[in-house]
Length: 114
Length: 333
Image (tube, rainbow over all chains, first blue to last red; front, side, top):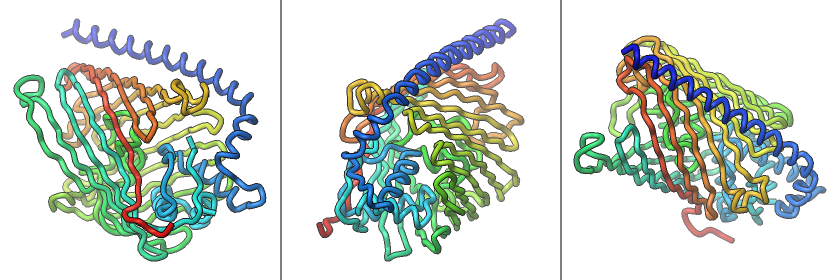
């Protein structure tokens, strides 16, 4: 029994050591890529604009884009694409699920379906 | 990741969405297959109502005696939610029917097969969500206020006891409050649930999420405490999308890691938690294929105290999931 306990302790220690090493490695990799991202941030933002077709003049749509980016990917990736017929349904569903206010719902809908 | 195509004009055609998956697991030598389908139906009714439901169908195929004997199948079906939402005011939604118990974050937000990172739920998932993860009754929810730098959300609910097939639920009440900081993408929250049948008891929870806007890193964590057990999990994921973009071969890879521990304060058979103190480390790899298909592989090592019945174990999981979303019928273009 004592032998079993000490073996278990060793296994736990090994696991914690392994977890610690992996976490350290992950932090180093992340720090590196965050730095890289910061450097490339301006370029990324510029290249994202045409894909989103955002209009600088439309403040509501811009607010909607920000809210979309801040809220929709909190829990899951946004769907790759969806039919225009269901944009209103999706945003209302997310209003309930993600506790969006009526204004948030309106702004996101303006961004998705101007 | 946010590559949604903007559309010409919004319509409220009801939708069918959800996930389809084939899960394969070997847990302490016990091998199982699980074909799963989980459809979600959402239908707006007028300007203020929304009807929504999610179902779960699974065929669990495993060996008769766990690790030996012939394979046999068990069909599992569940109505996870079937609710009517009334958008009463800009900051209040009233929900009636069967809904997901809003304790912590996993049950309501991360459990669907097309969202979850690991096939197995966290060890503490049963705290605050007894008995089935769903509740029958009423719920109020919404956002107290929403600014560009902070958003405060709330949920409160009461559930009645039910033993009706497909609609089992416990008599319970509770709430969750959370603050979300959109600029930093940090979320902190706390949950409370009081179990009001048999022996009454309280459960408390707290969660912290950080999804930095400049990085594909996602960090989610949760702590929960009940009368007989407590524990936590911390999950980090990092999609390699900064290497040639999220659609590149490398950019579709997402390494996953989760650490979790549970501590048993006193025995409570049937509470859904490990019977002894348990530590578990989960290592996974997810590959995002085009067209909403995901491949997922993970290895978990579980250590349980010697007096526990579970012991130490290796868990190997492999799955493929597909997420679908389409209108229920043709509408006006």
